[in-house]
Length: 263
Figure 1: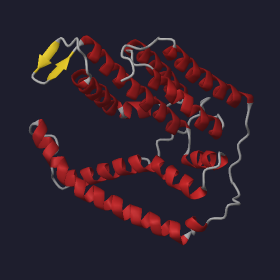
Figure 2 (figure 1 turned 45 degrees about the vertical axis):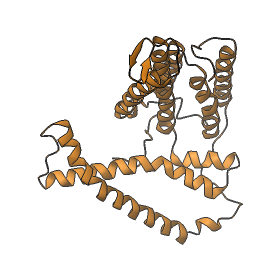
Figure 3 (figure 1 turned 30 degrees about the horizontal axis):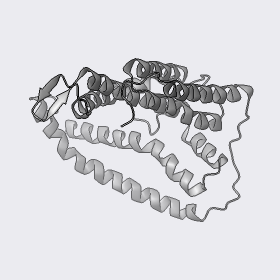
């Protein structure tokens, strides 16, 4: 498994300025957080899916469909059973639910999936080096940008390590596919030990590598190997993102996309 979710493609999203993409993320994330009506949340989900297609990130999204399904199901169940509602229709002991609470839970699940899609689209069209470069361009200290850029590689690295350990155990005769669901899950639990041990060793190696390069004593005056030109398309991207986020906030303040008021 690759250490990055970045996809080497020539899409409009890949050609945009790194700073423009980073700044556009904030208003893009605002829109899904605005609505708690499932129909309006579905609209923001479709916008996020359009951005996934524009970034050529559909293969990465397919790899995370399980996470998206878990977010939707768990959010629906938790909010449906825990949201205070005097018009509860279904009761089971101290737990109760109503059509409103179920709809609210679905909206929260769609909201989380919309933000997940935005994140997948961003990392699919942005190299870790571009992310680091854009953070430095907006004034973030170099040591902090380095720490944040490493998050791009953390999840893929752990997933790759887990896959390697699983294949090694299968080559030694461990069967992960026989038996019931609980039995299969039980066989995966011992794999956490070598995966975590490898992750700690990698973190230690990374720390020593950074210390040997004097990462903590880096000069404030840094030169850049990469340089990116700002174009009219980057301005248009940022303007559209800001307009999208502002329109979502205005619609919510006007009473649209709301089935549950502020709690």
